Length: 123
Image 1 (tube, rainbow, N blue to C red):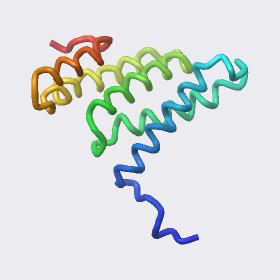
Image 2: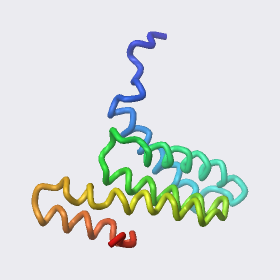
Image 3: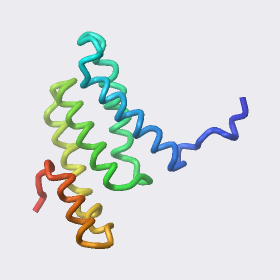
Image 4: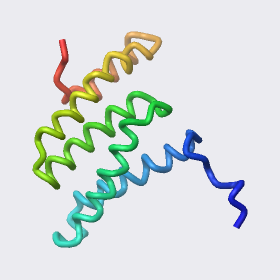
């Protein structure tokens, strides 16, 4: 196999694919089509991907906020680790001002605020 055609770790497209995979795994974990005893591996894989995405600075801030909140939800659900989930939520809250200020007009800023209304304010 020609490895020169594979995506590098820093390739932005690689993160888009990984983000899609994390969402799919999370949907499978939360779905009713997967048997209850078979759901945990999907949740663990999604948690691993979302944690990696939340810490990756090369992807857009809005996706990092979503990844940190999804990871917090999974961590609390799978491991009953509320302290770790809180830390992930705080990470998302700290990214929120940056994400809002990156948008060029007030309408886009308000849309982003509405999208992440579930995050508590750090003000």
